[in-house]
Image 1 (cartoon, one colour):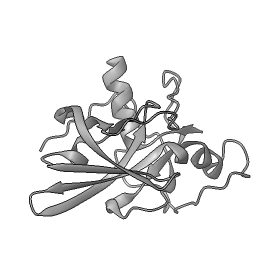
Image 2 (cartoon, rainbow, N blue to C red):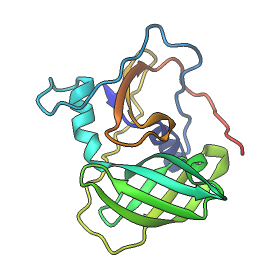
Image 3 (tube, rainbow, N blue to C red):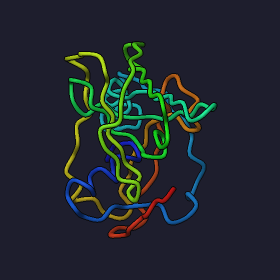
Image 4 (spheres, one colour):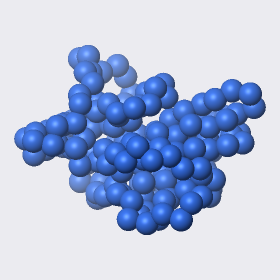
Length: 178
């Protein structure tokens, strides 16, 4: 099974200049949330989640007088985080919580690509040794492959949920806008 969170596909496309896979329709069966289990069978949803969860962050932002939230993944041990642009768009304040460590930090925007809905933020405090996600080579992904998405839908925070699905198409472009 392949693993990642939704922003990973867009990030891979930005880095490689290639196309990304997306789900063009309704899932074939209901998707159930799964809690990480470090003793799970290798390659299972729970096993993949256990490997990735330590590098996930909850992101909360202030937008005007409201708050918004989302999920990100740590991509460098010094606090660079990949997230979706819509999570941080128009925010005046960004805070991240390293879920596995229950530590909260302020952060700032490094850069974003609105059309790809990706952004990189940086923890403001001096940090080192943070757990990071490992990016895999997506060149062998095929329609029908199982994938795992991790994160907190609707900005609910707390332990991330793991959802499994399947690649339904390849070489498609998804354009986001504000």
